[in-house]
Amino acid sequence: MPKKIAIYPGSFDPITYGHIDIIKRASMLFDEVVVAVARNLGKTPLFSEAERVAMIREAIRELPTVSVDSFQGLLVDYARSMGAQAVIRGLRAVSDFEYELQMALVNRKLDEHMITVFLMPHEKYSYLNSSIVKELVRFNGDVSSFVPPHVEENLLQKMRKP
Image (cartoon, helix red, strand yellow):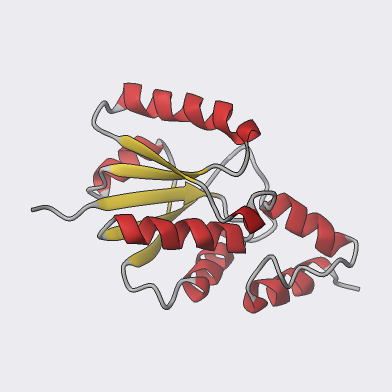
């Protein structure tokens, strides 16, 4: 039987405990999960691609069936190149659903065999996203309960320069 491989794409700028929760849930369902940092030309990330990949690798180092990569272009093309059968998307709230449904339907149109699996994070992370974390740091808020210590350290170094 072939390995069940899923891609969890995103900008992860930076990775949060909500992302990590989704990664852990996905790793229980699939033989292999690839966290794929997207090079989104429409966004200007705070962290470089290499910095994001490094922070994710550190955050998931205890999950042996999870790897980290980056990609550019169409997600379905990347997923196909990795031998993946599924794309993981996290849903925090109803407001996420419409956009994620549209993307899932477009991906299905591009590759009818690609399955999108929607996972909900633990409710304690349902309001959390990377933008909120960056905004908190910008105004000297405590983000220690939202991101791993190494991510918090990177945020502080990047955003609180004198």
